[in-house]
Length: 183
Length: 236
Image (tube, rainbow over all chains, first blue to last red; front, side):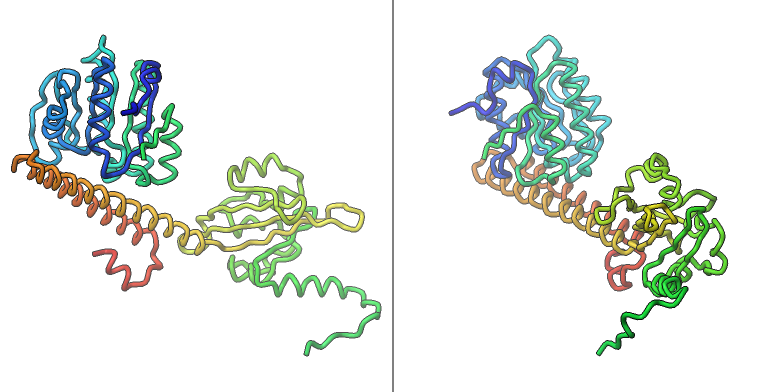
């Protein structure tokens, strides 16, 4: 099966925007984690779509070693209320719209994993549209991509193709080094 | 059939002046003319009605600014007379351009908070008037009230954003529910996990409803001219 992201470009700490169909986004997430883990990366998954507990279960079923993955989960607390963070494994955010907390979590989890080959997987920009306006999403993604570049870390942003408004799409394309349409 | 006057006869003295007065006065478009000393020469009826300032008060004065601004400042026509193109750029930054139709004329669109009940959006054109030798003898400024158009554009922008913030998120919920159903059918989820996924989607749906309420409120607040029946619906 061909690789979604080129190992060379990942090694160059590039930022990718991956467009996929709504029906395929979860599988794309799993395929990417598997692919990145095999290349020796530790992946920090920022999930606004599926809760951490279910993602870990699905990853395990697909044979992904959870030692290679940590999570920032913006779903679980929003759905079921209080949940304690698990140091080194998962950090929960109260609400996907709480960009301040999300920004702090990204910084801290990257710091926790300093010294490792790290890649960020953001799943997904599309779900953020439920909680935030396009301009606010754009500002936040700009903030995250700037941080990744400063810290010399590669990042992969997942979005459902045809779901984003053209203005947001064009801004996101300028933040990313490469836009990959998997459909 | 249109009656035509005699042709080939030499016009009587002052006839052109009267004709010009009649043309400017009867134009349905608000406009004024100033001479090269910035004094108002014509202030037509449409502008009288629009600004509430009678021509008799303006003719011969340099108070053309009074119709548009709180304090004294040049109008676009004044700036053209003075050749102050740098000031045009400064006073109308991001709001002006050169006319595509008339060489040397400028067009601008701006909001005038003191005009009308809730302010007015005006699209205005100023052009120099020259004599046969090309010497500047004055300037004319015409004004078009585009407030309704701007409000309609705002409304369309609101509706587009609203549509986008409904259709796309509803699609996400649909796809996530389908995905959850598939995982449940494949036996990959325990009841607690299914409940969590359903809770997540219910929370997403609640957020969409909150977004819509916020949009409806904003639309009603911003667009006072929405008919009462729609207003009631939008206000919930």
